[in-house]
Length: 349
Image (cartoon, rainbow, N blue to C red):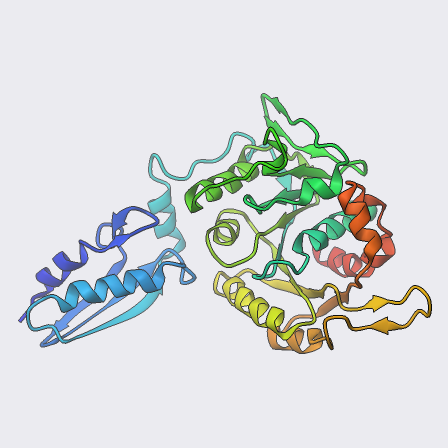
């Protein structure tokens, strides 16, 4: 029969792929017990939303089942305490504060998320930033979609050149004064592809937060890429996100993916402030009648399932495509997004 020492030795060969160390050395193995043919323990992850959770558990079970006499392995998932995470990531060579981070005064960080591509997250993030700016707030936009950035294209007719300073990288400023940081502002050509793996993408997002001199902001809007993998996890864990705005479209498929994204936010204990439905309908320019191009709306149902308010429904408007393509999105009527922004301002204050 296997012993606890043998079980611990077997688990010491199971690696956390993201951190590059074994789970015993990282202090993830808790309450290890060997009772006859059964082994059980608690796996304390850095977050229960860890995308590699199933892989680590599978590797641990295989390692233990390879021991003589072991027939059953039970793994309970737990989470490290804040102090344990600080000790783990606060070691030399790990997380370091950016040179501009201590100088920035950012009151609120709002993440715009969906989990699905093509629903208009960047559009909603841009409109939200504009609406808040028009309410007299100082606003910035952090484009966290490293491999598919679109924020600069919407805001600038011609891509501006970023400037460096002793305080850090200076973000670009739009016509209305919104501060913008995006990987596309650092590329020689806006069409250049960013072919990076997860760790590099996560590192860039952290630099956009810590090495960019944002100055004093009432709100920083973070435009997240699709999915619940590395970029979203980095934003949720590394940035002090105050709340999330979920974006969906009328199709039930989009609602399903939004529910997945909401589970991630909930597991990471980041509040969801509300839901915005984009491309809800189109208005006929001749008769003024509304048409549900993508079928009947499921926004009320999705909002109810998430337990959050439906902040608003945005129409399909060909004029916005022309403005975005020309880098003139700030000319979009404030009335289209104003009511949504007004509901958020109460939270920001």
